[in-house]
Image (cartoon, rainbow, N blue to C red; front, top):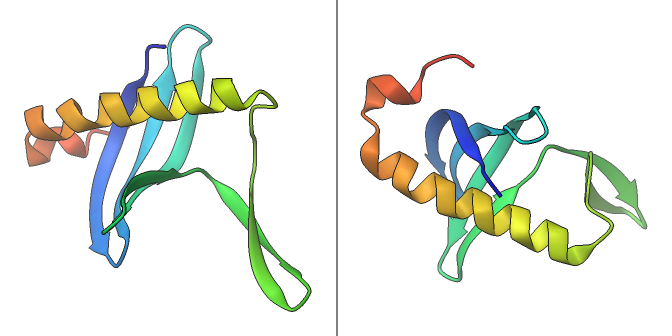
Length: 99
């Protein structure tokens, strides 16, 4: 799956390392405001989501999700793969181009 990283912004606050968008050219879909998160256990992605309260606890629900867990896994792997070289190759000026 081809994924293009758009408009990466470093945050580096707690587990949040950065925020960015992705473009999926095959289907012409742009998704904004994903987050790269990291702790001692590894990296993961935060997709745009909304919060709600259930049983007195704050919960999060993504605005969209694949019904097939395998598609979800492939997308996340493709994003992380595309994100790593993007951050290594781009200069700071390149990271803030609007999309």
